[in-house]
Amino acid sequence: MNYSAEDFARLFGIAPTALPAECLDLIKSADFNYEQPAPAKRDEIILGVMKHVDSDQPTQVGAQRSELWERCWSENLQNFVTSEFELEKLVPKFIKPGQPIRLNQQYVMPRNPAFELAFFQVCRAYYGLKYFAQAKSLHEFGCGTGFNLVALGKLMPHLQLHGLDWSPSACEMVNLIGKHHDLHITGTRFDFFAPDATLPITADSAVMTMVALEQTGPRNGAFIDFLLAKRPLICLHMEPLLDLYDENNLVDYLAARYHRKRGYLSGLLPRLRELAAAGKIEILETRRMFFGSLYHEGYSFVVWRPL
Image (cartoon, rainbow, N blue to C red):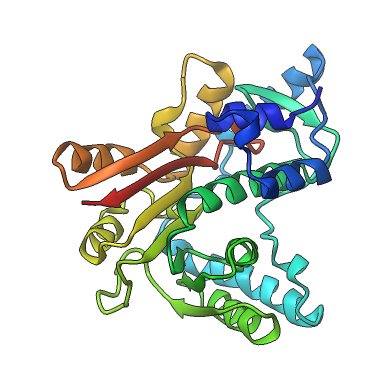
């Protein structure tokens, strides 16, 4: 089986002819073939997920993990420097190659070890081109290695890029990217739990989080209040959204259990819907990708703008 350009277009809710050329190029350059696992293999995958969720291995997210993230990004930083600043070294280690993945509420076996990364790259390009074309600058909060900013900066060279993260190593990586590659990009330290109200964000700026706000658990209110006060042009969040799972489906149910075990992002979508009902924001799109890694789906989108 193959996940085709037509499948991506259907996922995005557009006609295949409306897919941007940049997305088509990414689709053509990747191997999106996969197989449905045999019943015995599917049982093995499900049992492995259940045992992991029931174990003490999944740790709770939150501010207490800041030292762990600093160690992770410090390792990425060292690899980046040692490689003489190869951009390929920026891919975060949480995107694990060669595992079963979630697709359309089933577990599947991809032929390409980098299937998850390639799928994510298509989605990132589509939503970046759709929502950031009118912005003059892009601020990624929880930017990690900066690899999202690099990809979107190459697609839209007019953007001034700003990477914000609570890890000093992540900020240093972003600044090194700007120094050694032809990109207008800077790194600045930022704490989701205590946003800096003096941080300049102009009305022609775009804001995004990509699998980063998940680490705040239920404590995302201060960041949303910060964005409401700053009033950027557009806000895009690609995050695991618990509200979009169908827990009558076994694969979704296990993802929801894992989400709760980790204490991932909660309350964001209900808060945004309340703000929309009060006329304070407009939600432009909410979309589930029906795609994810072994334990959950981290790639759903909600896009909004202040009113």
